[in-house]
Length: 293
Image 1 (cartoon, rainbow, N blue to C red):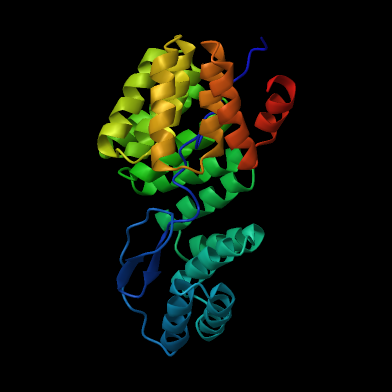
Image 2: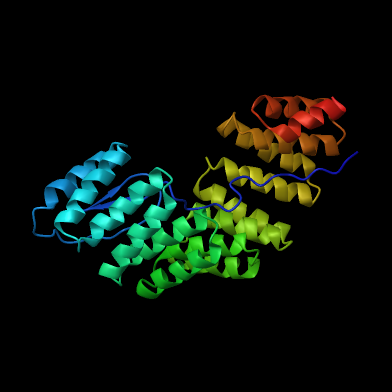
């Protein structure tokens, strides 16, 4: 029997680039991924029409239209740091990471105390694979705002990607001191402890993540992986089954449940799970079906 490796779902539990709070003048609205909270005063000037038009377009998913209007607002007022900031966010939505970094950099040049711009630029750098650059920006965001829990979290993610697991764990713990009910950060603690070989500690962290958010399929999958490592195969299967109940199209968890079934010599059950994972596009599972089923 070949030894197979269970796969970690949402491996680094990113507070990712898809859920930000965009800044509208004197209003903070939530949209889709960077957890930002800041309120700024309305600029006096005739760029407000284009700024607010751009904001509305971005909220409706018209990112190109938003970028165009922010550009007009900037032409009228080249010192409008919020326009650069929001144009940067819209560029992220169309995967123009270099353009986004340029806009966030300009926003920082206009306002060197713009913690959210450092944070967002760090997220884009992380997404682009520049983990050291991301960490540098998160450090700056934290220097400006020492209570920036999400910056600690995402700095932990970047350290995790660099395999600095002890450093990542310290950042997750700092984030939890500021926001103890953040299920994603508890999930990050679980992943880090697993990587440090502390599977029981990982299970405890996943328990807390699930307690806060019982619909978190990734924590069930990851807790199942940790239980598999301590040879609690039935416990692992139970967790994978719960993850599937939440998300029936979660290919990875069918694959992982199949691995645990194989380990208790339930080859028929393993093949059933791998066939399902294969039908959902998992290439590893498809190969295992050809080999064993």
